[in-house]
Image (cartoon, rainbow, N blue to C red):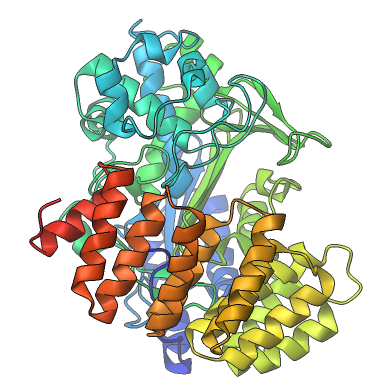
Length: 567
């Protein structure tokens, strides 16, 4: 199954100029006849947001502001497509990413109101094995601990699931109910239950319970034909357009498509309890679990309600959530007590460098939820962003010089720039700049010599340079330090595949298969490598091996259909 998408070309100076010009034009057109305070704020945003977008290398944003419990203003800035300069408009659709979850949670609470769902009853008692296998085939759903999971555990992220299973079987980080650990996978499990209870496909349930009652006419968990015109393109950390798939199967925790205005209509309902009984609404928004860092330790960062974050601020309790689908990002934070809020969607990978700045500007909060230590997004003025801007302007060699100046001696080296440096090394590798990629990874390894991800990256550089023995030695070393590196190695193989280094990519995929022989995903990737190289027989052989491991592995099934070969 394919990893990261291929990259398109960088933004040029002309498109940057077009972006700024269109941003200002869009803002003037978007200003409504609203309260004076909102109008003044909109004017200020029109002055501040375009240069912030340029600094973050993010092409565009759509933002909506709630005042007095209503959608008071929507503004559109920048470009929905960096290659064409086409502007973001009011009906531009973005991926809401993890902000899919609060919308689902709100619809679910209507089932609670209807007495069709008990938040504390194990979901396994409400579904059959056949129901379960619609999401998790028998080869993936064997751990019996899933029988303890309740709707409340899903909504408060206490299932014990990792964030996503990916190609791996169902697994647990800890026993259900033990503590908070953010998981999109739990929402997939919960959606299976909703479909069993209601007898409706998930997206139909959400349409009937949420979208139509709230007037969210442009929202869906699956792709619509109208999105071919409305959808914003995604962009990487350099502001380059990336390819994006179309979700034809709903992913309840991540695949919502929406506009800023549509989502604001949902937030108006969330902030007032519209559509829910007072009891259900208060249960949804009250703090139910404390979040203490990503490892469950440390100081209190914030709390979680049912499907929504709860943040204590100097202005009162806020409800909030963020979205991060890589090259699409989104955020909302609302003050129910003040009937105020903001939501925005952005089509660039660096977007969350802007999120605290915009939220403070609109909401006047000293500490918006996303400023909590739980999050590790680089700020606009961080070394990570400065190195990225230098890379975009001058390439890896210049970025390495900047990193050598900014990063040494920093106790938070990895968080402030090191991890970004690895991402830039991947980009250099995809551009066949092997010397630049090597310089970046060597600098990283000077600070963290045993880091498994950096070691894997260096292994990719070794094979790209023709040193297969060096690749094997480094991958062996990495797996001893971090045995769960299947996906990292696989993704690196796709970087080389995208750079047309086919033999090198196949070498990485083959190593993965040798060390993870029960992974359908690894087998499928090796098959794809051989197919791209033109060896149809080997491709078919490995696609079939993938289906021997997992008969339901859709990528291999689809590939064999395209090749007109029986499973």
